[in-house]
Image (cartoon, rainbow, N blue to C red; front, top):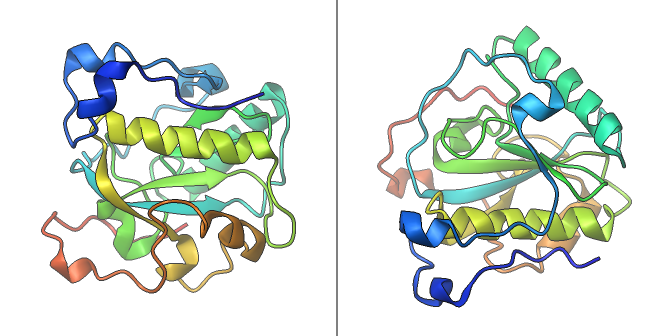
Amino acid sequence: MAFKLLVSAVFASLLSAHASPLALKSIERSFPFYSKEEWGAEVPTDVRPLHHPAPYVVIHHTYIPSACDSREDCSAKMRSMQRYHNSLGWGDIGYHFCVGGDGAAYEGRGWDTVGIHATVANSHSIGICLIGDWRVELPPVEQLETTKALIEEGVIRGKISPDYKLIAHNQVSATECPGDALVAEFSTWPHYTPGRPDFSVLTTTPAATTSA
């Protein structure tokens, strides 16, 4: 099954930081997407606005919980992660979106709220987490393709900069996340940027630097 974001021809000239409302109506997802309400989220208490367009996309894995391959299982793991992150005082699940092995995207904080997932990158990024442990094995193809399509959607919506930098969590924090196998895979994707990012050139107001 191909997981490619279907976009009408009108977008050929609209891949910019701010797509028009008319253009946004032409977006058609070809992957399942479940809102916070649909996976049973608790009401968030941390809703600080994120400055757009975000110049970075940070990729994560969960390690724990393990991979999931159905809406029921992935939804349960989203609820588990949110409960754990709430217990840390984060006011919601830390990531903007998670992607399951079922090829579905699960809304975390969404496009418009600052995440808590990557220390100094929090106020400059969209954090996408691929549910599972990807240190040795690769995620299913559907999980990878939905991640790519979700990033593309963010660019079209003006939530992610067209010249965004794609980085791993371990480029900003001392962690194995998102796993060597996953890093080796997405290092071949467009916009991957190795090394430690230089946030000193950015002007957005810093947010809390707590990390996942």
